[in-house]
Length: 284
Image (cartoon, rainbow, N blue to C red; front, side):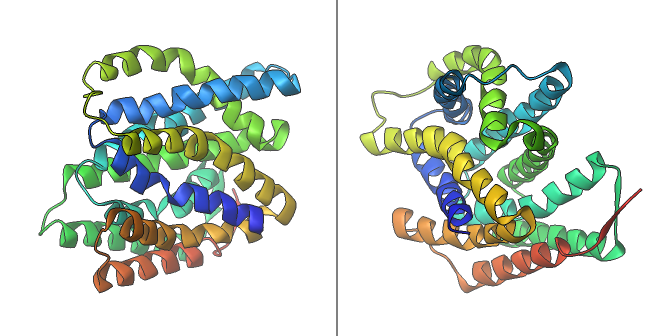
């Protein structure tokens, strides 16, 4: 449980520190560059343990996982953090565990119960309602980007889960980073030309370093190890705290205002996620 909490604690700083990093650094540079930096550490780790190459089927799932976890989710959330507060983003991204369960059910050809679908629908409606309410009556493009990030991230996690049980969690995220690295170099170099490096402060670079090393890599070690030791069903419930931890860090580090309305929406979203993940899902 402590390892699971450590992983969630690391992940909960991602949105606030991404918001810091994109002040003068291009969002695409931050979103994809963090994966390129993490790939260096992934390569060192895989060489150190002499990890065998994944087979063709595993490579396919790892490539699909990379599209969501390594490319889609970081790029879209980095862009969104330029336009909405990180506490706002935390509530939208709070749907990620429930959508991941839905993606997993789809990939495993399972049939979620009516209760699961109700929880998913209510949770989605709450998130969209919050985004419209907080956006002055309309959805901001950043909200659509965050919802897209949730869908892609959930898809990536579900694909990665298909090989995690075979090669292990750290190896899964490491190979995903290595596979995606050659395709990230050109976009990162292009985005780097649009960065105002001279104006970027040490704090912004520290934020980038954190999301690259901790959020994109080290956090997965603690998270996957916790799931392995304590069981997925039990330890994964710790992730329900992430919304509140992110909101707390946003207020503490960035001085963002966390209103009572935001807290109520966060509680409601977390409740639907908790209920939905307890609903039965049967094999087709």
